[in-house]
Length: 138
Image 1 (cartoon, rainbow, N blue to C red):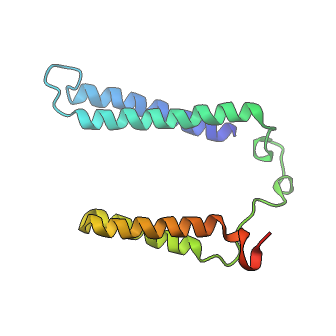
Image 2: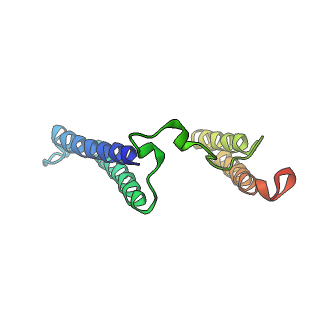
């Protein structure tokens, strides 16, 4: 996790400095305050990136080092199962279609968004409970 921690904390630090520079260049810190949205967006990006970096740092203290963190590690050190995935599942496709309908609904009409949200709830429940019924039930 060391690489991920450095990546997110470095990105957060960069965006914090960029927010300061952007604020000074747009006179945000002066009396005019010409453009506050860009500075606020950069501050939020910095805060979110730093929040992820801090979360990863705290998590790294509570788990064993991963094979990726060993400089002398080999490819075989990371072998084995990487998770449980639904074989031949159609629910991710339905969920993606629901997301597309929701985004289209924000542009075309909120009633379309409602249809996409309802389809998204059905798809999410179907995907979560896929192993609870049917051929792959446990």
